[in-house]
Image 1: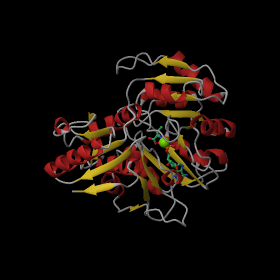
Image 2 (image 1 turned 90 degrees about the horizontal axis):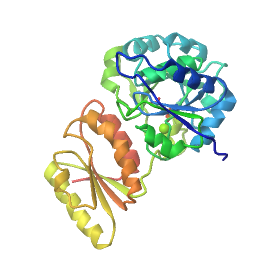
Image 3 (image 1 turned 120 degrees about the vertical axis):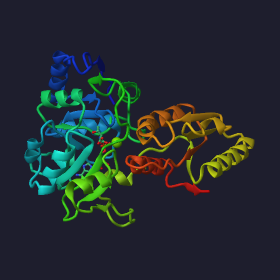
Image 4 (image 1 turned 30 degrees about the horizontal axis):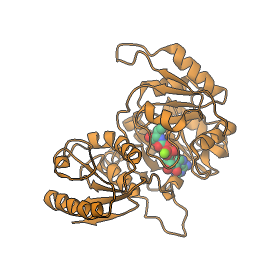
Length: 354
Ligand code: TXA
Ligand code: MG
C-alpha cells in the first residue's frame, strides 16, 4: 500500500472554557469531504473517519485497517435528526434511546436507506449509527458534512486505540491526518443494539449497560445468541477473533486467594519451560505475582479504570512479546459485562475457574 504523509494535529483549547481551534477542525473536515481519512478521538476509542456517503472513502477505510470487507462501519452523526437520512425507518425506541444516551457510547442498528453505499454497510440491509460524546469528534463530524464512517482506528486484529500514539503506531502513513486530543474517557467500544427486530438485541456490551437500556425503554432486550457454525453472525465483527495477543491468554476466575495461588503455581511451571509469563491484575493483588511482567489495570472493583487501561496494557504486553498472559476475571457491575466480553474474546474463550 502506498504510504502517505500523515499530519498530526494536537488539538488546542480542549479545556471546558476554551474553544477548539476552528482552523484545525475545518481542515480536518475538508479532508473527509474530499474523500480522505482522519483519525479522531471519541469518548470510547479513537476512530478512523471517512465520508460515510462516499463509497470510495469507505473502501479506503477498509484498506487502511486491513479490515475484512464483510465487516460494516458505524456511521457517526452530530445530530439525531440526521439518522432519518441514512435509515429507512426509525422505530419509536430509537427516539427513547437517543434522548437518554446520545451523545454517548451507544450504537443503534436501523434499516439502511439507499443513500448509504454498500461499502459502508458491507452490503447489509441495515446501518449502524451513533453520536459520540466528545467535542473534537462532534466538531469534526459537523465540519465533515455530518456523516462520518468510523471503525476503531487500529490495524485489524489489534486492540482498539485509546491514545493518539496507539493510532500513530498502527496507521501512520495510511491516513491523511490524526487528531490528537489526549486519552479517551471510556476505553472500550460503544454498546451496540439492533433495533430492526421486534425485540431489541444487544450485539456488543459497552459502557451503557443492558440495565441502563431496559430502564430507559421499559422493556427487556435480548442478547445475541452464541455463534452457531451455520448461521451468519448478527454483528459481522463478532465472528472475527477481534484481538488476539501474541501470547496465549488465560482468564482465571474465582476467589482472590485461589486465583493468586493458581496463577503463581502455573507461572512456576511455565517458567521452568522457559516461557515469558505476564499477569493482568488489579491493585489488590498485583504485588503478589511472580511473573516476568505484572500489569495493574486499576483499583479493585473500579470498572471504569479497568476499562480505561485494558487496551493500553494489552498493547504493552504485545510489545513485550509475552508467551503466556494470565488475567484475573474482573467481576464488576455496569461496564463489567463489556470488560468480560473483550477479555473473553482476547482469551479465545479460555477461562479457568478455580
Ligand atoms: O465505540 C465505537 O463504536 C467505536 C468508535 C470509533 O465510535 N467504533 C467501533 O467501530 O468500535 P468498529 O468498526 O471497530 O466496530 C463496529 C462493530 C463491528 O463489530 C461491526 O460488525 C458492527 O459494529 N456493525 C456495524 N454495522 C452493523 C450493522 N449494520 N449490523 C450489525 N453490526 C454492525
Ligand atoms: Mg474495532
